[in-house]
Structure formats: structure tokens, C-alpha cells
Picture 1 (cartoon, rainbow, N blue to C red):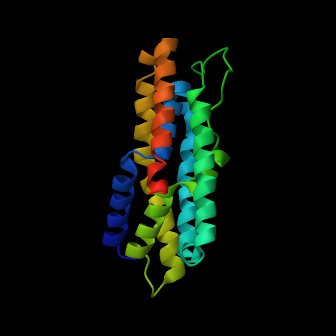
Picture 2: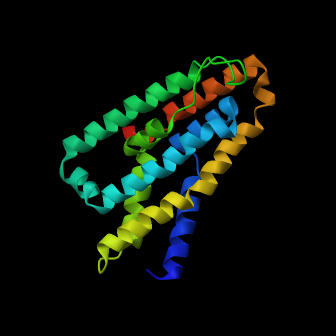
Length: 198
């Protein structure tokens, strides 16, 4: 794969992951509630999960979902249920994670990686990247390169979202503001379900 293509792919990964979406809202909330160090497993889970979705799409799962609408609907419903669960978990969080406090825990690596399989934004990015950048003359290598390039390319954007949450920690030290913030993040997560509905 030419270096220009890899650079374009990296730019695609950064730009497509900068916009708001379920994983970014979760990272923002986790950064605010738990700090960057405790949010890193979740952040790495997003990247790893996206990589596995990319590999799955490159292996033909996207075509399978298009061919079997009932399976696609099941994935959408599972994704919606998972997202509602995460929204509830964030919306009902009462205190900022910190020294001596254990009221809540951040979303872990496996939860975050697994969520990418039900995240409509991850599927859209995977299908788009594979359609544009995978090369039919070397399908296995190009699918691997595209998957890894996107997984690495999204890291700066994910760090930005988690970092924005960390930057809000001082403001959110007041439990009333933290409660409002967590409810707002939960509502944004629920609102991110709208593309699934329409």
C-alpha cells in the first residue's frame, strides 16, 4: 500500500473520530469522573474494538449483515440496549472517582472493545474505510493495514475527548455540577441512538 494512501487513511481516521459519538461521549464522561489514567483502558478498548470491527468488515461481515436483515436488526437492538445501559450507568453516577472513593468504576477495556461491535459510528467508519482503502489485489494485507492504521489513527482524537473530560474535573468537583454533567452525558448517549432509529 503506497505511503500516500496510508497517510490519507490516517487523516480519515483522525477526522472521522473527532466528531461526537457514543464512544467519545463515554470517554469525555470517564475523563471527567475518573481522570486520564483510569480512562486509558477504556480508550485503548475503543481502539482495539474498532480494529476488530474493521477486520470483521474486511472479512465480509458487513456483507453478511446486508444480506441478513434480521441479523442486522439484532445487532442494532443489542447496540441500543448496551448504550442505554451505559447511559444509565453514567447518568446515575453520584461522585467523582478519586482517592478513598469507590462509588463507581470506569468502563473497562473489554466492555469498551465489545461496545464497538454495536456502535453504529464504528460500523460506518469500518465500512467506509474498507470500501475506500482496501485493495482487491492484496485483500489480506490491505485489510490488516487499514484496520491497524485506523486503530492507531483514532488514538489522538480519543485522547482529546478524554482530555477534555479531565480538563473539566475542577469545575465538576462540586457534586451538583458533576451530577448535571453526568445526566447531560447520559442524554447525549441516548440521543446518539437516533441514527439507529432512522
